[in-house]
Length: 363
Image 1 (cartoon, rainbow, N blue to C red):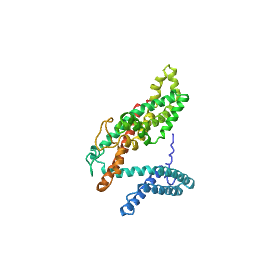
Image 2 (cartoon, rainbow, N blue to C red):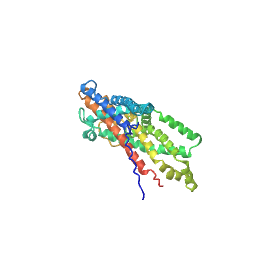
Image 3 (cartoon, rainbow, N blue to C red):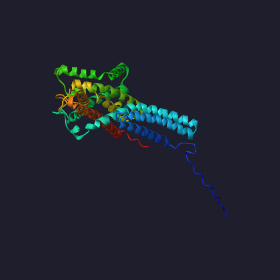
Image 4 (cartoon, rainbow, N blue to C red):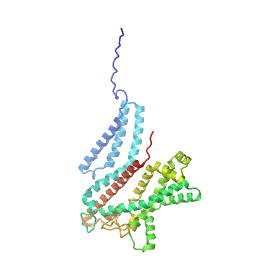
């Protein structure tokens, strides 16, 4: 008759008594450190000791508190060797967070200041006949979208075809010359691009002309080298084996580029175009020269002056004086917030397009 031997149940072990912190402990300690220091700064702001809540100080000192807390906790539970390892890791994370502090400060300031006029009127009205409170930036938003879209229509085909030539066909002096001038154009100041567009159109239409299309041409001068350099790097990443396989089947070179190389790199190309758009959409100097500024709606790129959001922010802030100074400053901050939101939406749309048209690989 078979006999069975009962095995004793394993004793339950606690991760603390086992000499190891659980995986969620560092993250929890970081969040708690931020909350503790944030509460301190909130009390200082409420008592009037500081002017408003300082989010940068709260995150910085909260991260420093986390470094101390993770080291002490690990030293007590895990020993000195693991504690030093966790301390060094937390210091690396602290350096990363410090690098993000300017971005955090910028975002916090724009959001908190821009919410003052983030209303329906701001996005549905222009500044026509508005002197004090009220008004909006609809004319500037429309102008920014139209000018940037036209700049993209001009820049993307030129930049993409140039990068295809440099990667797939370019050899010798001509390719090196194009690369050199593209690098030079990358460092051109934006004001120079505006002066170039103004001088170009002044030759044909006279010195007094200003319109949105001139602004698109000025922005395209800044946008083309960014598109070329980003697209060139993406196209070089495409494996040569894909090209060779297509050519081995007798597919012409141009069709290989069109059907193999471009679909493979579509996600990176769209990202590069979005980076180029983000590079030029906030430019003020060239648009101030060639597109001018107006308080009225203008949907026609080729006729009369056209307002853009960067110029709107600039004019509202510089004209802040007298009894209605705060109203102009509020409109400037909200215009900056709207510009950031537009850039974020364009990047989101670009990622969706890239994901939708990216090649699907099966097993």
